[in-house]
Length: 611
Image (cartoon, rainbow, N blue to C red; front, side, top):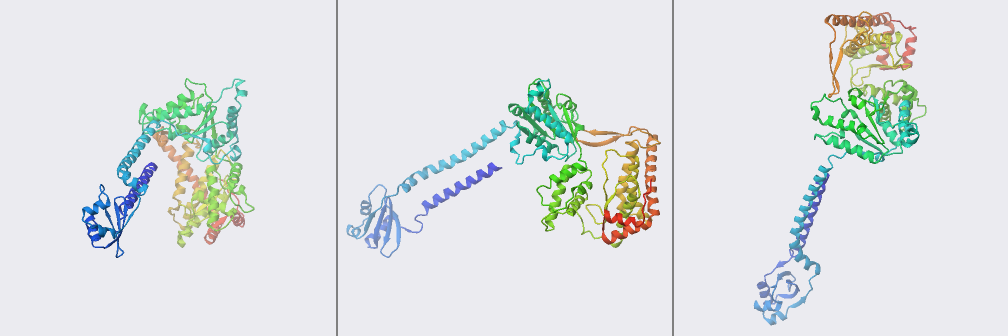
């Protein structure tokens, strides 16, 4: 497209130049009267001509009345001979002033060369552009199998491991790989061989690509990077050719590192696609397998790959000798989140007294990318409000925006809807404050955010990787808090509890069929998930149990739901006065923070009720 625009530009310039030249030579005499040679002869005889200027074959005529005209003489004859042939009296010609002017070299040669050469130049330029486009197309055809591999030097901002918060074990593993490339001798002396590949595994946003960029910043060897999707084209064989070219480029610069991002684009399990053995993706994968550990083993190229779908990768890709190391990147804990927030706030103007620990407490489950987005949203919010520095509340508001979406204050609730929403959220908060094994309430709001009409924000005191049955039951009871509150206060229920009921039903079924937390059915998992690997998502769940067991599962799910509902109803019924106080505060203020909530429930000497 860029080449097309360039050709159009030069074509327009050429046409303008031609138009200028023709207008220059064609309109020189456009302002003067043109006389034929016989008319000029008659005027000389009549004594009307005062002066004639001869410029080659061109005659510039000045009349006695002040007018000017132009004429032409015969090319083969002189001026006197021409006039004599047309009957001009010698005495009349003697009364006319004659001036001979030398014709300029430029106009003389231009008048000869331009009419002859201009068509040739135009045709030549046209052929030149056509041939150049054809050459470009042929060059693209020959370079179609070349990999679009990039060297690390193209990165603008250099990143090192100091710029990556957390991920201590992952950084240690990668530092060892970098050290092997820097100082291979100390490893080879004791018989250690260079690892073939390192696979970075983790959820989206956990820092896989960031770690790769940090490796590039730490390593003193050439670092090449490419996306796996760039290997594959619609033509069979192109992906394999590009794979060979990428590895060949890395081998020429060895010792070096080749980083392949999102390797699951070509590394999915073979035999599940629609193209069979001739599928382009499978051919590309086969070439990667050969390049990493084929007959040629003498190489000093380490392949680092990243993916968030290790479950769909081909087993041959994961065997020892190819990806020898697999580094799992977890979501950051509270300390790591605090450090990540500090890193992403370095280039932002902060007010004094910002406590990143408080922000880290409110962001469990956030990835590094989420935290970076959080600080960016805080900066945008500050600028929107016309302030010069980010304050603590801006960060808190940004957390809620990332979690639930922007505030929708334009969504005006009727008095009845506002009251229902207030009691619904108050029910969630009251049950959460009354049960052990649950997390403290950080904020309650009836201001709509995203698709939620209101929300109750609770965050854990400490982070754990495991969750007990009592904690799940507490979560279920909290989910029913809003539903029960509406039913008790208004003797009716609204659609506001639909999402709570959906989440509660799914969680209760998981307790029975996946977590083995049913005493009646026992510690057995039910249902086998079937996945279509080439689609990369869950398609269906195979029913690997009898109809009798299915009925027992339904009964157990109903029993768990009923127990959680009963617990929520017991709390709200016994503490209806606290519920009304919380709802009244919400209706007045629309938002209750943690300290305000704790101060409110202390007035009623609230004590936790166990399940």
